[in-house]
Length: 222
Figure 1 (cartoon, rainbow, N blue to C red):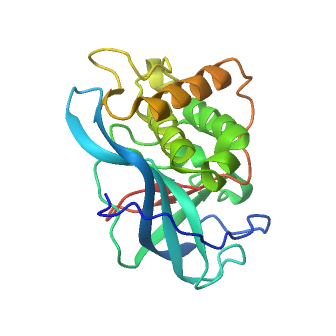
Figure 2 (cartoon, one colour):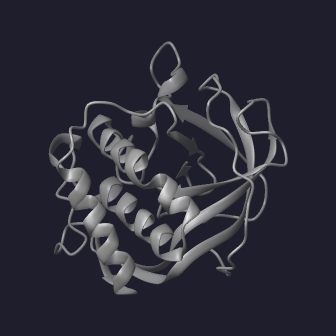
Figure 3 (cartoon, one colour):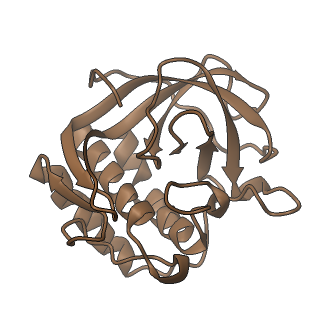
């Protein structure tokens, strides 16, 4: 997903304005900050080696006031099937703040591999992780960045009954999402964060949580 893990400082954009969820934005992937590479296994028991950490995107063009052209922000992968490519690509917004009238662009509608959409239960769990740990994951070091990414993947890809939330365990066995190899510190921290949100009441989805979807390259969330 990235050939480098250079640590750089990037300007962060405000996420307080209102958008039309059906609007598009052109983004360019520029960098990855990761504690290292991990081998993860998907529920169909396919293993892949991958960087786990926060990605940086630069806004190539946008009509939305939260994402000024030329600004940059950190984001996290929700798509293990497609790469992040260092060239401009057009994405659709998925945000509960301004879902479309027919309700097809909320966070729960974000397409993810293996299902037609993320679903409400997983969107609520991601929102809980976002509200408790996103600031830490985007302002601290590689350890926290990698932990957030691993925890996010566990929520997104762990199978649950009827599209519900699965058991949030990064060490579970065959037929689940799991981390097979990689630096233990981030995996341990990620599991502690998953344990933390497991006891929370998943009743809301933050308006500040934004997904970016495309059929061409990697989908991601900020």
